[in-house]
Image 1 (cartoon, rainbow, N blue to C red):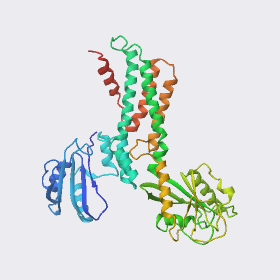
Image 2 (cartoon, rainbow, N blue to C red; image 1 turned 135 degrees about the horizontal axis):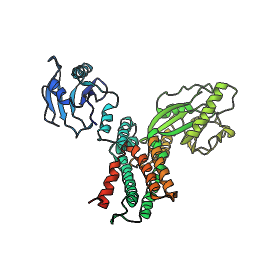
Image 3 (cartoon, rainbow, N blue to C red; image 1 turned 30 degrees about the vertical axis):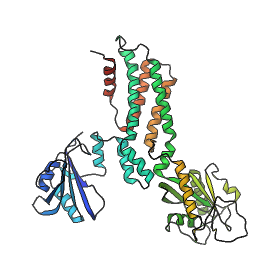
Image 4 (spheres, rainbow, N blue to C red; image 1 turned 90 degrees about the vertical axis):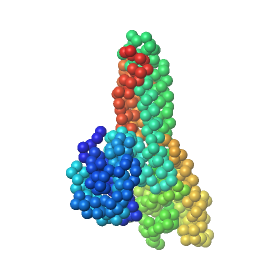
Length: 440
């Protein structure tokens, strides 16, 4: 799908910078090079040029490159200008480009949108690219890179191809039954294909929660009685003043979140209101939100200090969530006995902080998949695979005629087609005619 207009934009980082890259995509990329760089350089060869605007005024001395369609990132002709990264330089080049009739500034994500529309990437690769740009940890980077490279696309298209094969067998059995090379009984092999696909999809969906944790972060809720050191611990782990710390009990009224990189994994740390019975309506709301944060967490850090014990009746909130008992203010001597702790820490002296960070990272590593594993990390993926699986389950449970079975398989294939953004009925015809030699 080629669009009539040509787009231009700064494709590198924020300005000022050492080098800036301005990219042009569309049918007028050659014209842009001729106008700005004097001529079109040899394809895929960088050429040092004096860049000028339409009036001949010099803008910069930089590199000009040309990439010819269809073998480009967008599937269209692409021109690139590698410039000195000053704001005035980039603004001048963009102004000169958009002064050419038919060239306009690109909208957000439009280069990637054109790549998808022109078939150079599918939706999973586009999403992988977005995740790669947003990656904050090594695990997120590895997972996003695999998706941007087409690993998830290969899995989903492989499933779709097997569905096409199964559906082709069924449709051939009733559409071309008079052909000698069409098997009379295809029910058994078709059901084997469908059952195998259903099992793989179930295993894939079983990793959905782990994929969500990898992409969105391992959620850790810090809970305890007022003045147990929750905000102090959050600040110590974050290594900045993310939460207000005072000696006044009940300072924290809402959930405060900080995203950390611990051991290469994204950890979403939540400071919560102190757990206690209170008549203060605002503090009561904070306590309820703290309980909600506990219930939604992947791990709870249950804090106690010698002067802030957690009431037993509140300790049972969200009891199914894994938890670590942390003894805070380890540097403070006290004769008061606390609940046996997994780790003792002191934010003031640093005692136990490294051990706690390592323990959280270990728990996060257990909760997420191997970064290279193919798991549905987005809700869209989970929903589409689950919808396709429902159709396969209905097919497995159905004793309906082959025509109904073929329709159920078609619906399953359509759900998978939404994952990559491609659903092509020509694939089905290709399989029927190539495998059964019909019509020769």
